[in-house]
Image (tube, rainbow, N blue to C red):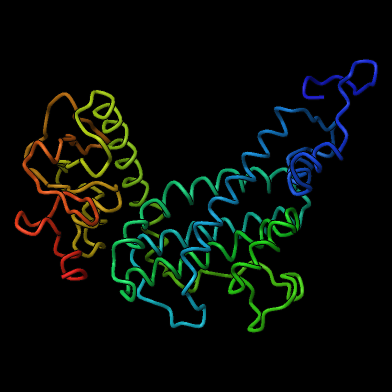
Length: 337
């Protein structure tokens, strides 16, 4: 059992596989099997099963989100123009593909389970959290939204194939609602009628992108994490509400690594703010100080309330960058008006 004791009727700690399949699902039982190291004694218990149930629910949740996103998407569409964030996600996805492929080939099922747990949480809390604004607020046929759909499709394509040998019932359910996830042009009765494996996505980014991912990108991730930490403190003190209530004043020393990242970003500061899911980032000449200031790898910043800075909130996307007369930002105004 989960305490390391041998299962015995006299101890009352026996858990029948049928109990898991009847109360939860066969997929969760299969997930549990992959979470265990089969070279040693395998443990099972309510708490261990609950961990796998949470992973199953997490996979279902992100699947529902992506299926809704891909409702009008066709994989035959030409590759859209990908932003730096999109290309960084594809580099991370290629890492995921290589790890999953290697673990399946070596029968390291517990590693597959651990990789699914960490990667799916990362995809959900990072890339998909950032591009929600593009998906919901950009024009339906805009290149930025099409790029987000394309990357979401590739991510889902890999995710479904990673879980297919473990959770076939869930994959069949996904296929019933999202047939484009199959590589076949014709919809079949089953996803497994046209089996295919993980796709190589390295053709969608360059060696220069890989260099950015290996160096400059990590500085951005550290800065984003630091801003989130200080923002959480300000939110706890009721200085701000959501992350879009935040504006950041940022000071970068001369020749700081983030300057090279800004050079790669179109509308650099605005895009950097989008990546941090805040309303605005302003570069300042002197290091800012205050109750909600922070430092990260030589960069210093301060978190302030956009509302207290007399910024106008867009009624459509909720960013504090709107025209005071229309209460719409320039992007939303071009779509609505």
